[in-house]
Length: 403
Length: 175
Image (cartoon, rainbow over all chains, first blue to last red):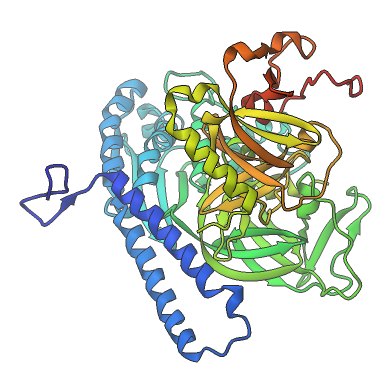
């Protein structure tokens, strides 16, 4: 090995490898998998009887998949490092808030993509500050409420499916429904008589510029950290879930994909365009009957999809996006299929022409002029060499219900 | 890996040859056709020239951004320069090529009627843009290069790929 080669640590058979080398390997693995897919789906092979070839292809695809997984695993690190940095901030938070806080860390060994871990500190610090500053009561209030004087914050991580959930939970006063609702109505998030579900209401506390802190402290309450949180979560394709019980505490969960390298997607076609949707966003796929898609004249022609007695708002991609005129569908075209996305605003029905495939796609960020595409995480390179737009169902759902 | 159409390969060779003389690269321009006119871009920003390929349309884009191509694992948005200039669209043929450039750290492919050659145009042969266009802001025309028996309109790629309106000195409405 040259001097610049990996260092082998004497104690535990661990190697230090520069992260750009792993990045390079990941890029190559991505190109390899695309290239293999392109080869085995070559139009030159259409119509040929190739039974041995098929067997070999099957085996090749399995190996490529395993290489992908192994490469992805190499970049996984425990969240411990981020958690340790946050713990060091605790003393500072105590000093600034004048509160006594006990922090319990759980699941620090949970693994996450290094690229994700590197970006978690700022958003988590923000959530932690909120918990310390707004969540936990001052010691005298806690004693008056019959709680232990020392406030508790639990910072935990766990893997659930392809997501890592990082939770900051305090045992403070809980969110004040009346105050938040009042402010949310003022800001126009809800109508004056609307009584939103708790989960829908709590989400607004993470809207940019939304802060109910009466006195703006040095710690939080200026609504600035929220932007960092929202931007980072959008970039990491994560989402925020808030739960709270009055007098008992607040729990903020960040749900983040374990790895950003490959994305398990369903590929959809609408007209000439291809879209990719992360598999875990798809609740179900349905074929609508002739009367299942009524239009509400009162709602400006808002379409609904009737499913098992319930109604789901419909978002037509050709209406949501600019420059996608609905091409007239020929009479003998097969009926459209409806994909139901599970967003944090509830289900959203999106009609498409066809569902093509389920694939591990390589995602490329939208840079330059492509950055102006709304409701998309990036471009997915498909095995066929085609490019699909990866839909951000949350952002689609946030405005998709409106005409 | 990539199938090149013949004119693209020819100019690719020209590109390579030009690459060797890095000391004069600032004066080197790749010229191309839009209708009867000859245009040019500085060669330093040009990465490669490829033949026309399947374009995947992308929503939320102005009409002159036709979509993207997957060029060996890189996603490249394509700009139809005719549409960008507000000239009538023309169907692509075997001369149509894509000039792939790197502008402001992002790739862009320019769809042009055809490439001509790599020319050396010394600064003294270029009339500055200040005399063209009308008025304020940065102009897409960086200058006019005087050539033997003609001129080449030299473009500023960063203005070309920006989303601003182009003040081309052509009176196109009063908006």
